[in-house]
Length: 79
Image (cartoon, rainbow, N blue to C red; front, side, top):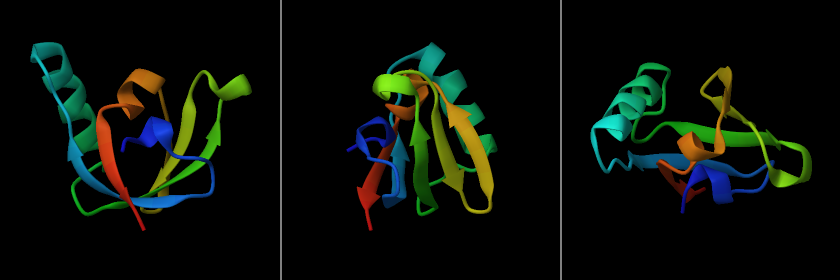
């Protein structure tokens, strides 16, 4: 399951960042730099209008907005 599939209010734990090429490797590094690391707890706070657009996510004590394409790369386990 990935972050894009989780409903707001649900908590999860990052299991890995999926990558399939050089472009995704860059995004993976950026996601890891801001705290999306294996074992880290995350919570989807809000999704964009009609379920499209940026997804607001809390990682630890920080809050970030991710594009849907970025959220699809973050594989998680529901807590």
